[in-house]
Amino acid sequence: MKLYNYFRSSASFRVRIALAIKGIPYEYVPVHIARGDHKLPAFGDISVEGLVPVLELDDGTRLTQSMAIIEYIDELQPAPALVPPDPIGRARVRALAQIVACEIHPINNLRVLKYLTRELKVEEEAKNTWYRHWVRTGLESFERQLAQLPSSTYSFGDAPTLADCCLVPQIFNGQRFNVDFSGLPRTMAAFEACMALAPFQQAQPSACPDAEA
Image (cartoon, rainbow, N blue to C red; front, side, top):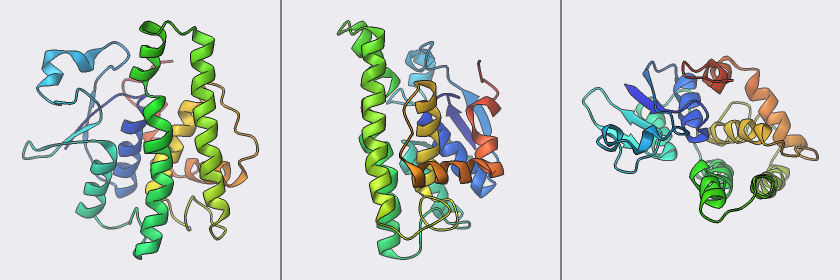
């Protein structure tokens, strides 16, 4: 397999975590999003969306969108499972994951932030305030959801799930923008528990071959 991704892309980070949890080897193919490599014709031939991540299978099939890729990986290699076996449990985990992937990430994506500054002429600090507001709002929702669930080591249960694959990259990105994580005890406890595990360490941005300071 080949994974086209960018070390700072939280969507790419999600997939790297899933692959590491499963122990699935892959070739790391960097695409420098901040530099605009995703807009080059060569990458357009790989991804019609012009986005990362893209997972290319051994037969040349290419999969896009991190959530779909992770679901594929989980079906391809069921153990260790990234979603619970029961329907309610799966719904809970997917809801947590989607708070990040559908509520927080889309309005704080790099291309959205660039549009705010370049097209709408929003000042840098106003852009950062925008980012911090929506991350904080989303994580407060995440925390309220966790409060409705039984106590657990990770976001859901005693093993990492799809929810953690999404949460950890969002916390990493939030740290870069100085988001306030106070008052989120279960969310941050899940993050810390995940970061004590080798797959999360292996997948983090600083461990990527294209990592920059």
